[in-house]
Length: 489
Ligand code: NAD
Image 1 (cartoon, rainbow, N blue to C red):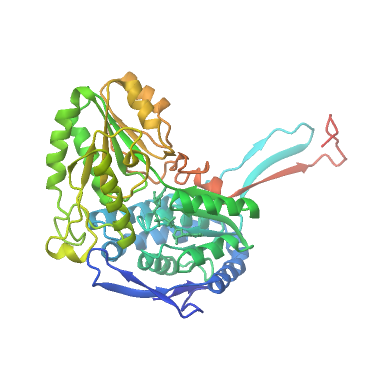
Image 2 (image 1 turned 120 degrees about the horizontal axis):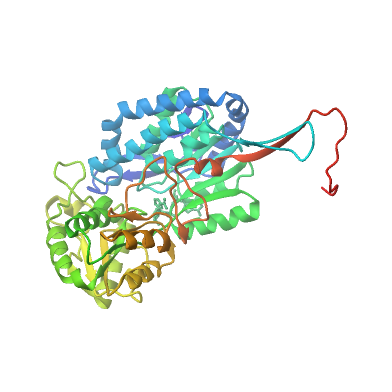
């Protein structure tokens, strides 16, 4: 398996490779991928720079035609790609199909927006003069992503960036490189000209080379808050535009008047879907004291019935975690949780039968968790849920907000007044009412506040704020020099 540079599949100049391994069965090696260096990145950026001029000058709706076709090809290859994605990163095939559907929706959405990259006009202070401002592409965009949504998350960045007339160098996670190559195959088949989209595989070395390259004008990053913050600091020094989608520690509140069955379904899916490895996963559950005990009893029973296993097998509900490092990290947080709070279910690595060959962690729930406890505060990124008890709506919201992240949030209540107060008062980029903390839609702004982001939003038309710059134009058709009333500009 190779890098994709200037429309060709090429090995890394380093000759180094890394293995892509199935986390459900580590005996299954999917392939060797290039461990690229800065010289590979330079080749990719050179290709993207050379392709930029003709791509930006292509009429935007024609670019949209290519993206629409890409959506059709993603649709045609959905089952095949879902199987590949599950094999390399573990989540169930139902979920990987959902991941690809997100890219399909984004492709059609971005294609449509190529006819609506609206600017605006405004009256001039002077006679016979016209003012307008419109969106311009920026140049080469460096896209660096995590592994948990190998197609959806890159599509949120790459497809709008291309729609706007930029070219792209993409460094996927080294835990999901195969899906990235299929992404390239699909764009190539859709008719994207050589050099407009390039894939460079590797780890932090390749990612860092993208950030450092002077011809990369925008960096779009999804990953941990630690990595993203370091990248943003460097981009600040280099005067580069950078958008960050980082960690989360999302809370679901359940009030005493909630539909408890609905709230149970929501937290099971939010906490243990994708094995808890979503930036939007529910990792904190805040229960009103009036329903706390009965809710926990039901939740323990249901969590204990979730079927762990290979995501490619029928009936599996929870797949493995991504790799040994993440397994070790999750298990160490579980040990801390056991020391500080009460583990009411799970709390162990599951090695039963075939699972001994993979990275499986039983869905784990801690109760008696307060804001002082480690599992309440830190992103674990695994199937671990921390439960806290509150006695009022105000206390619930304050506890939800007692967090260094601010991505997603949820409240289950039948009280419309509390629902509206929660929409206003919960500090997060996304709030769900009577729905779990997960489930983004392609045409809606996506992103978070505090330690989750730096003020940008993917999804919806807001993504074009990341991948375009404003150009303001004044057209003076008076035929003589006009000077502003206050002539000091
Ligand atoms: P990570 O930060 O370790 O890696 C993310 C990407 O950055 C990878 O491609 C990696 O190779 C690259 N990278 C690492 N160091 C780099 C450096 N110094 N310079 C440039 N690139 C570098 O994150 P991860 O473990 O792959 O993903 C899990 C994290 O991603 C979690 O914190 C999760 O919340 C977050 N995430 C956020 C969102 C969101 O939309 N907010 C979505 C998915 C995942």
